[in-house]
Amino acid sequence: MKQTKNLRPAGFTLVEIMIVVAIIGLLAAIAIPNFVKARATSQANACINNLRQIDAAANQFALEQHRTTGNTISYPNDLTPYIKLNSGNNIPACPAGGNYSCNAVGTTPTCDLANTVTPGHFLP
Figure 1: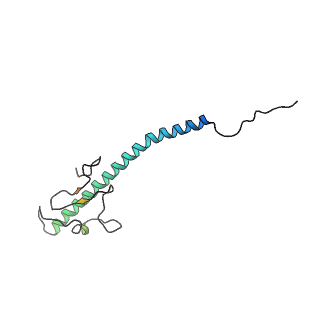
Figure 2: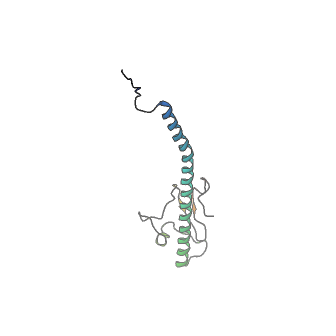
Figure 3: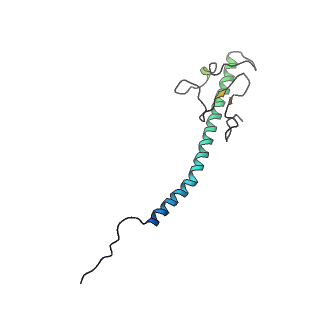
């Protein structure tokens, strides 16, 4: 007596593959917006910390150079000795591509992306 075996080819069915793709798509739809939001928040926090360092450097410069409120500051040349520089020997830049300015003693340093992005790049 001959026995016939039910041979099924190895592999996945189309339905199984479609279910896996749908699950991956659902996870991506949840994860990507959270990643973008976390990145923007991280860039804003780094920018605010850079602004705090620039403000502290401007205050220290004013004390050592006997400057009063309203005297002009040559940014970044005057502040370079008073702030921790990055690996390129420059004052740290805004991680989102903004530019910093600090024009006078007693004024708050600003980033040109201040209110154009969310969350904002400005000192509270």
